[in-house]
Image 1 (tube, helix red, strand yellow):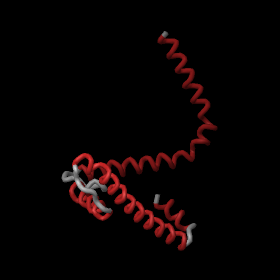
Image 2: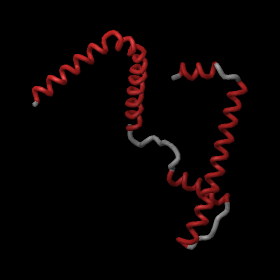
Image 3: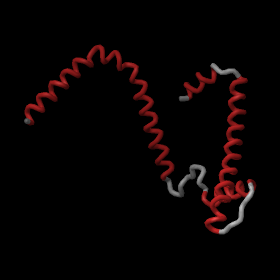
Image 4: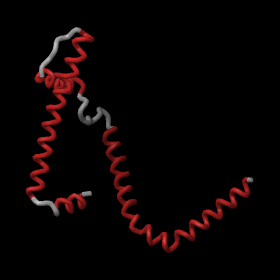
Length: 136
C-alpha cells in the first residue's frame, strides 16, 4: 500500500496536493457547520413539543454536540481497558498481509488457466457426475 501511495503522489504536483488539503479542510469545516445546524433544527422542532424545553441557537447546538462527545465519546475509536485491542490489531494485520499476498498471486491466474485450468475443470466435472450417479 505504501508503494501505491508513493506512486500516486509521485505523479501529483505540489499545487494539486495543497489544493486537496485545503479542500479537505473546507469540507470538514462545512460538515461541522452543517452538523451544528442540523442539531439546532432538530432540537427546536422536537424538544419544545415533546419535553416543553426552550429553543436554542446555533452555538448552543454546537455546545450540545461537544457535551455529547465528552459524555458519550461516540465519534472515534477508543482503546478498551483490556488487551483485546492488541489482539484485534494482530488479527487484522495478519489477515491484511495474507490477503495482499493472495492478491499478488493472481498475476499467475491467466497463465495457469491456459495451461492446466481446463484440464482440471473437466476432471472435476467428471468426478461430480460420477458422485451424482453413485448417490442415485
